[in-house]
Image (cartoon, rainbow, N blue to C red; front, side, top):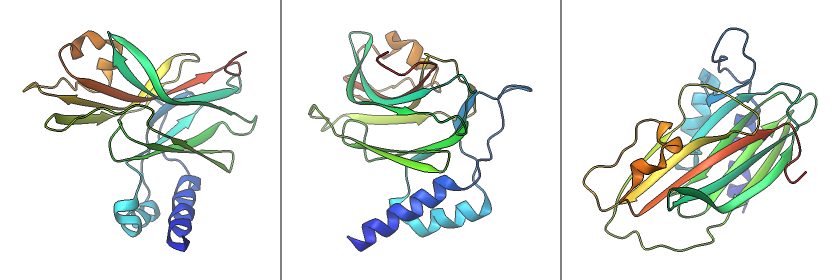
Length: 203
């Protein structure tokens, strides 16, 4: 229990360190992309070892954004259907910048999400609500890399994983999220997404 708490404190400290990602374009202060790690953060990564989160992302949003939602979705008949998550986090006036960390083994299992915003840490455990036998299937995954502009209300994929019996799996960056037809014939396709909103979700 003590070791688990210590690891959680280290992850929290890592999230609280200064974000280093640059905006996607001059004058753009609304973006999300893979975090650029400082030397201090890299040393923390080595300390965490196998317990280090899969990916960490930096984000910056304008004052008009009031909330964010992270969820796990699965592709069903060319439509992304929520399988876990969906909880809303309110954005404070001062919390324009922050970080999102993902921790999981595979996206068809439990996914742990940590969000740092304005010095506060929010942790969400997205429990797998459905079970699929992926034994014998090939698996490939990709993550959001370069920063992209945040458009309020638009769902942005952070991680994507495919389980398939096919010999080739399309993973052309995260662009395939908006072209689900490319995954026809593949058994299971999952993604973790984030959506920033100018209203509270459910309003």
